[in-house]
Amino acid sequence: MKIRKYLSLLAIVLLASSFTWMAPKPTLYIIGDSTVRNGDGSGKNGQWGWGTLVHQYFDTSKLTIANHAIGGRSSRTFINEGRWDKILETLQAGDYVLIQFGHNDGGPLDDTARARGSIKGIGEESKEIYNPIRKQQEVVYTYGHYLRKYIKDAKAKGAIAIVCSPVPRDNWKEGKVNRSNNDYGKWAKEIAESEGVPFVDLNNLIADKYEEMGAEKVKPLFYGDHTHTSKEGAEINAAVVASGVKNLSNCSLSTYLKEK
Image (tube, rainbow, N blue to C red; front, top):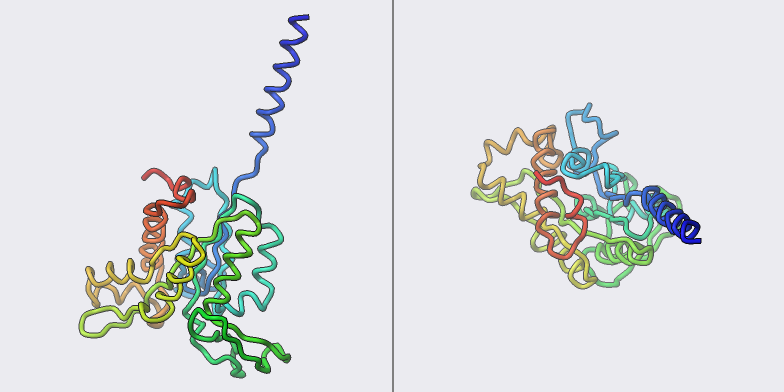
């Protein structure tokens, strides 16, 4: 009788262990524009996004990284093209969403080239337009509205959203990097705070690093223009992202960083 009881207990333990072993790894979804993932991510055009290189700082035996960022997108068009809905199909409790938009949100709302801009600010203003790209009427909202949607949708799935301010461009004035502390960087921070989610201030963290290096040394970190980084520039940005995550006091994503 005792042997039978022992064997039953052993079977339960083994069954529980097998479920633990089979448990899927959480996924870190990365969404953003070309400063996060450029082209197909191979860097063959000389331009690299930090999201392509950030995996080296995480223990990918415990965390899956899915970089869904794509060039030319804004907080608005990433949603309108169905890219966010596609992520929501697989997003699960315990997953993470790292969000960085802003570089393309300042464009026109309804131009015939891209029609990707969002209304400036974090309020709930809206404007109905005819979208010449999609050839249909569309209600356009603020940058803050779209960030809130990503956060609320992620929370509804039991996932953790992390907001980043947009990385700075290679634009200087009187020896200082131009920062987005009066627009998209500020708005990203305000949304993160109001929604109670972690915030990584990439704009200021990277700008501080650039200013320490000086304009001449920063120049090679960009390729082709003042916005898109070379591989070396993307490496620096990825390192700052990892450091920013590490310093978050309220986010379990830091537990998946490699010790070094």
